[in-house]
Image (cartoon, rainbow, N blue to C red):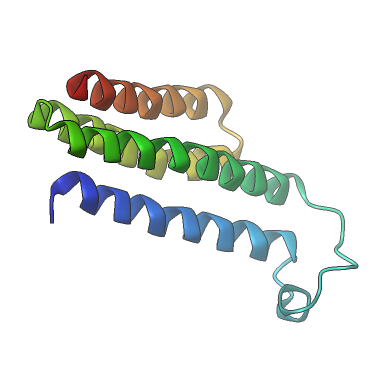
Length: 127
């Protein structure tokens, strides 16, 4: 499997784990609430709210990463730059989640920017 597709698979797993973590934090760790219809959720804690926003942001960025990966693979661009960009995206997004959940604002934003730059590098290598 090409490295960029492997990183896409890892990013997909990461997204699922972020959604799952956000869901459990939102349910307050109460498995009955988590398995229920969630009609009576308690107010989110600040950490749960950050986890939900981080997971939603990852979903938005994953969509872009999928598109950039497909374009990059189809264009047969500069392979090393595409792989570097994919690695930048994945590792920055992996570090982004705990920073966001912990409320570390500037580092979180810098990590987001690194991930976006990784996608930009992939796209520039493909064009």
